[in-house]
Image (cartoon, rainbow, N blue to C red; front, side, top):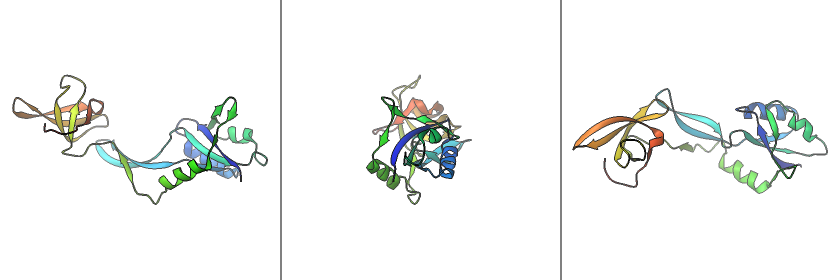
Length: 169
């Protein structure tokens, strides 16, 4: 059994690298998670790499050359420390495999749900509380803000909103 190493892949080519490494008999692992996102105005769940641009490989350096691994389609280079490829502890790989098991149907989501209390941290409404209504495209949210005793709808960037610790809009 070989040792685990960390590879950097070319941009968005983790799956291509895994496929080509497997063809060469190199065991590879790219931890994937299910992420909820807004795509074209609706919520969707997509599979994404936990560490975009990186994957782990396990091979015996006596039977497979590191040059062969490094020159595989989709692979950019080994992550190194002091010129030597970084070895990854087996225990860490085991933990990642358990947490990202495909049977685990957990979805990671940073998107607020309808009715969630938010605080506005940027822009002209900074400091006010708001209530999430719905996504407005992929970068913005429609929120309800209480101004002059009236609830006003506003479209704000997601980057201007954080989960509120409490309080009404």
